[in-house]
Length: 396
Image (cartoon, rainbow, N blue to C red; front, side, top):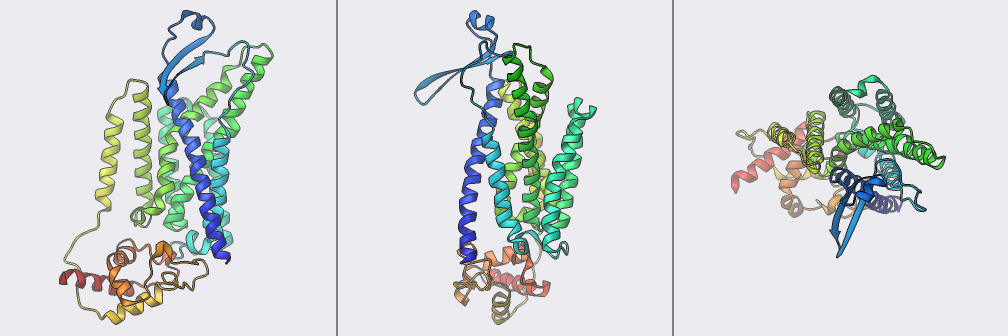
């Protein structure tokens, strides 16, 4: 019953995280688009009132006009809409989800003893320290003169993110490493909102309310952090879906794949930001395509003559029953799984043969199953499945 309730909690929190994430990232992308599509106001009276740009749009059967003031409107409107709870709700739900899946289920999802022999407290403590430490290091760097040169700072962030990816993949299961990478970037993004962007906006409003000219420094810092958040967005979105793609996180060079896809995501975002501004070079997009293509090529499984020697199906059945059916059964015995994951049941010979390709791919090609190698499947047992599958292909 406990596992059943945790599954339901997982479902509801994941759904909430998905909804709030859409709201946060959607509003972020919209405001970047809005900023880059501002044009000089048609009415000169608007310019005299401090309007620096305007955008006209049509949606849902109506016309909309958005205007941006160069400083602040006078007088201030009675109601100002703030965009912050989308970010906070996304982070809170994401951390709760991280706790449910990877901390409560640390033995299943967080720890892979073939990667590193960690106790549950050490694994959870290390994960939290890395997430918090990521923000601290980033924030300190943003307060140094390095931040004045965007290219140097971007290169430094790339190096640090690469080190982060490598370190996570050297400590945790591949699946957890990817999620923790995204959680670290996501924490940086929401901390930027909480500690820099929103306080900067509040300082501006307080100055206006006192009749003073706002200090531009907080606004510039907020703008810089907002730009950083923009380029973190696509890598974080990839990580949110990465658990569906074992070919990436289970690969021998999973950290390099994570870095390559993150670079491609940042380049794609660079292209679209520039395109919104009307001056887009296709070079970032082309480089992103090349990076993704090269990554796919490097990951492609090596083809060869295969290992098609005959094995007894009795041997295959023994491996499956010993290593797989404690989870993949109509009545799982593993306490973490009240029902067979993905509905895959391997209780009888017909079910095993019917899922031969999936079994082969997950246990031999990606080696992502058994998850975290909880049942200690050996290389010899994987060879048995390999030989069996190759023999099946030869008879087709």
